[in-house]
Image (cartoon, rainbow, N blue to C red):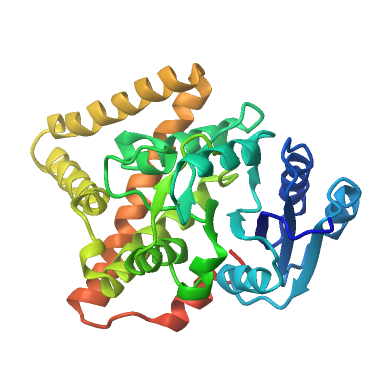
Length: 336
């Protein structure tokens, strides 16, 4: 590539060689090839060098860097500093990019006067049943996750770093990512405060593999819940009513269980109705009874994990007035 590309694709990686191989394969199949790929290995003990070597002939503009483990945000900034494109595009390493992504994005950006965009994520047919169930939990209106799937009615749209891009002018004025909880939301807030135009490019979707186990998913959403309080401390107006719903659901669920044990089992009826609604919605969406059954515990984890993380962070950081613990945030995020 003799000229500077339009797009610089920047991907932080930590111990995900198999996922990186799928990502690079999907990038090698793009119909629009005016992009470079910058892969930043963030202190991995299981590197992705073999995957890079395999797809380098099909992606001649790929650059592969290895550095010590400092966290995803610093890895992204490391990639930005070495990029050449006029648009900086960020994917998670466990994403698969549809072949028409950049062609679709190019046409959309000709029509939309945006400085920063985000796109939705979805589950590909090749994903495991557990991943499809987790995808339902993270994108369903029933779990307040609908905005990740491209629905913007719950709150003002905020791009997320699994599928996000902004211009070099934005970077020059706003700077890079900060190493913290929900660094992508923080980045979007800073971009919006600087007066840049942010929007959803609904057609520019990616397939997102999600976590491969409920245990890892629980940890992920627990941190999401904690991060919402961190964002409130930084941006007081960012906390909306929808963000408190999982915490309220946790409290309501505990109350119902206590009353069921102490008064009458009929107090479990609201929980049963909710779980039935989740099962029905997941079955309608997936057309798979196995995925629908797995979507029930996945949705409980989504609501319960997020809600518990939110409650813990609210109690320690706001009620006890301890504020942010930046060292803790960095420690938790390293290598995740």
